[in-house]
Amino acid sequence: MPDYIQRWIEVRRRERQADGTWSCHYVIFEFGTKKWRCKKGSADGTFRTPEEAEAAALTQAQQIVDSLQTSASSL
Image (tube, rainbow, N blue to C red):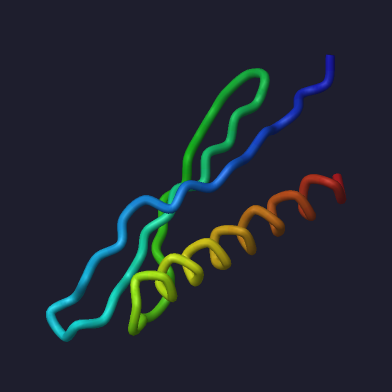
């Protein structure tokens, strides 16, 4: 039976900074048939609204997931 990996992204925390800008954190979960792991991160930069911060975090996490899928398919 081949090992497969299922991944998903959760946007977790939006935080308002002292200067009024926003940041946002994400978690990437990865489940395989034999193990699981997660990677945490946050959007690079600060943003004017919580929605901008959330969109940036989701975009950044999706780029990571896409790069993982590309490297796995080249094996």
